[in-house]
Length: 162
Image 1 (spheres, rainbow, N blue to C red):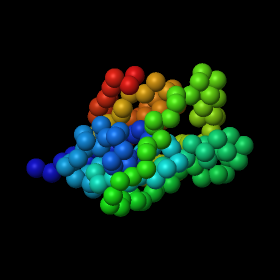
Image 2 (cartoon, rainbow, N blue to C red):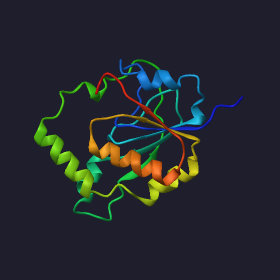
Image 3 (cartoon, rainbow, N blue to C red):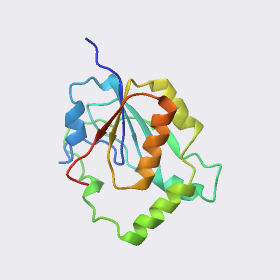
Image 4 (tube, helix red, strand yellow):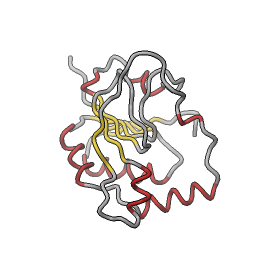
């Protein structure tokens, strides 16, 4: 039996061999063409478990508050190479309350609902949506937008991080 196509929506790009491999491990063996990942950081993915990526650049979302014509999302390629990878950005110190509030305001007023995002969703056409649960409102808005747009079953994943 062929695997269902699954779309994962998260914050960080998937990068093998960084020590943060929970989601990578979930979908290892699923079939790289049956998994897509939408994420919001500016780094590029580097993993063996997925071939379809869409990046919503947080840096460009910030700039889009003023420059409304700026493209904030794009399909990106897997930069898969052999050998160890650089340390993952998720190990950074958590943002303070002021920075978190600013991030939420930027995502509230920034432009991330784009025709490029909609085209990626339609082209990949997932059967199931897999959403890690985050403590960020902006991720809830993004995931909710995708769930409403696609009307597919949603699996929520809550970890000990939250």
